[in-house]
Image 1 (cartoon, one colour):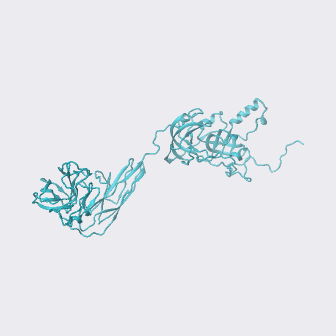
Image 2 (cartoon, rainbow, N blue to C red):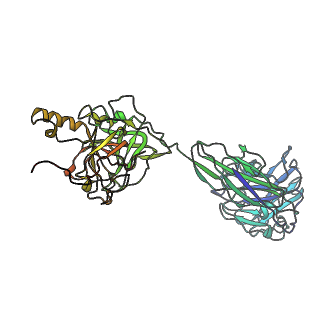
Image 3 (cartoon, helix red, strand yellow):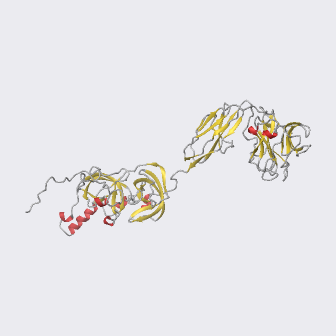
Amino acid sequence: MLLFTQLVGVAQPALAVSTSVVISQFQVAGATAGDEFIELHNVSSGPVDLNGYRVVYRSAAGTSDVALVNWAASTVIPAGGFYLITTSSGYTGAAAANITYNGGTSGTLAGASGGLALRNGAANTGTVIDSVGYGSATNAFVETATTTAPAANASKARTSNGCADTDNNSADFGTVNPSTPRNSSSAVQLCNSGSTAPSITTQPQSQTIPSGGTATLTVAASGTAPLGYQCYEGASGTTSTPVGTNSSSFTTPALTATTQYWVRVSNSSGTADSTTATITVNATPCAAPDVTIGSVQGTGDTAASGTFTVQGVVVGDYEGASPALRGFYLQDSGDSNAATSDGIFVFEGDNANRVSVGDVVQVTGTASENQGQSQLSSTTGVELCGTTSTVTPTDVSLPFASATAAEQYEGMLVRFPQTLYVTEHFQLGRFGQVLMSSGGRLKQPTNVTTPGASALAQQAANDLNQIIVDDDTQAQNPDPILFGRGGQPLSASNTLRGADTAAGVVGVMTYTWSGNAASGNAYRLRPVGALGGGVLSFQPANPRPASVPSVGGT
């Protein structure tokens, strides 16, 4: 939205304003000696027809006119309007000529001194409407005292936006460097001794927005009320695309490409143009083509090789320096192939902290296997898509159908809907992990069957009916130890016993180690740091006996 603030100024003392057209700016040399221009300005309150007028030049002490241009047909300059006269070759200014004269390669206007006049009528005898002498000129076109000769690429211009006219060239003209010629397409500048022309006091500021967004710009102006406002699309001075209305507010449309805006403020005494405000539109995030995570994971236990771009939801955040896992788990909506995992680990070697669980992220990285777990390695290819989402965990139950059955869930958010039992906590203190099973605490095979083939078969069944539940790091001897009863850390008064239970456990299925060979690579469920997970609320199911039970014997 463009918001324009009107500041009303105090009227300045009246100038001796001409009643018609003045020579408002001139340049005697620019890039070359032939780079000349003369600018006219209608300082009256109505249109002026130049039919019958002519612009002439005299050398420093010249007594005869050198004709530059004359008008033999109706050519009207509106009130406050400008008109630009340039050499037909050699002129290099930004504003296009309204009429030209042949100045040759060396130009007509002397660089050191000379005089210009606007006449109504014949050369040498027509009425002088306005004139100016510069440098050391002594000809009849000097009004009171000359203005200095402009340097190359600079001009002499009447002050007060072309309105100053006290019949003293020295007082009325100032230097403009570099020159800024105006033509009939330039903003009008009305000369009114009873009011103050607008002046921009606060410029609209450039901004950066996302694709499809809008921008709010502000501009403030001083000047005699009422002030009018017109917004334009494009660079300042470009009037081909007006937008909005004469209002103190303007709401830009939703933008998908970088766009420029500016505003012209006007009143009865003239106009003022703001600088250009560039609204830079960032490219749509995560617009790069991507593939499914399943196509990277494949149907086996080895990921595809190469560089891939994938997009999904962060289902597990384990970023940071070691002993953190130094990355995060990303899961997409799937490829309808149950044999391929829809999740993958993104390894960030710079130990950054870029994402949070639930973030939608696009990643470009190199696929590989690290200690048996598929991963994408990337530090510069992680792009937040600007949205969040959720993932429904996939239900997984113990016992697994085979030793490799968990592979299809590697990197995914899963849920064990059954009740799980603490079957071992030997490495709880060292690695913050417990071994859990379904149907109850697992027993040593020879406690329930005879040694040999039967015991071996029981051990194989036990191996499929267990999963390591680990904390969120690979730290050894963690403090605190997260897994105690009731979701509280382990302590002397809050222990965890074999056969204690947890139900509906949600976490990320990882294939990692504990950080030490004493607990090597294995499928581990990590509920802490997972989307919808957290520290398990273990429930007591195997209370410590109040007294020593009888074991028989003597």
